[in-house]
Image 1 (tube, helix red, strand yellow):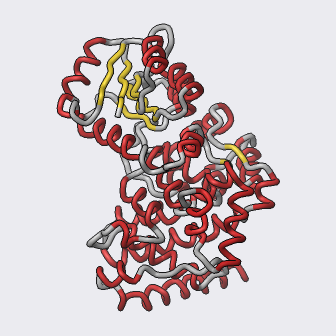
Image 2: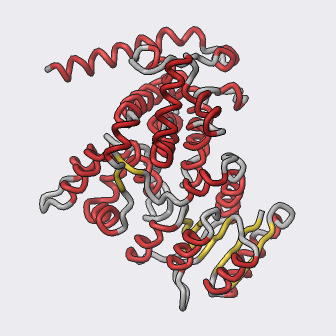
Length: 401
């Protein structure tokens, strides 16, 4: 695995070289002082990961990462910078998969690069992997995109309204959670919901991100006609809500519950990515699943070579979301494959998915009995099912009123 580090300050590069000396047996590392040198390195032998400073003379980091994105879409792009100027950060958002703030601890940098390297083997279809890497945003439902644009362009834009619109769209939620949980804006607290994220970022930042940096985009109406995007979001939001309740009841661990909520909300983000890149094929896969009685993810693997689980995990990993979320997105239909021996967000999400789907209009999803029995959770299933039904009944009562 080849990793290229770019910084115009020789002392910084020397420090990174010393800090990562223990990784020499695992990575082939290159160190250069300018964007021009970085491009030359890529042209002679492309790297798998590039880690670049932002403020450099001549070609700055945002320009460099933009060129790498266009010319070498297979590379994972990480910004490592002490730059706090918002205009630079907004430019970086467009081109970097992740943003790490200087000074950066060795463990944080190693984890970011190592995870980037591990992701390279998650999607066997390199063309699809490159398409995912090229996506600085995921398209949103057209009506939700139009709503957010109207709200943000209003002289009386409301954070409450913005949060509600973002929460109603899986693509906007994914992007906002990526940004707010990275070092882009220097927020120290853990953020698990899109509404909370919008409150922390504020109207001005979100306006600039959306209207200037273009972090949101929208699906063509023709895609919405082929793929039930609204159905994807409806199920995901119910799974996230129930997964959080299950995790809290089982562990009393707020962070685990937050991870379960985020993962549940994002379980089908891979289907949104597939819809953005190959809507016709995805629609055919879903029709085949309905006709055959097979699970959608099985048919997806037959058609695409991988399912929405791998595609979704690739994206959230690429965007630097926490490992428990990646695990839950990657194995939410098949937790026993992950061989977990204790309760985790993955368990909460799988159980929630089974319960939500069994009692809803979507395709049947089988419970992974091996995983549930191994964790001695069989007896809790009826209680969790009752909790979901009670919550669903309350929601219907409120909407009827």
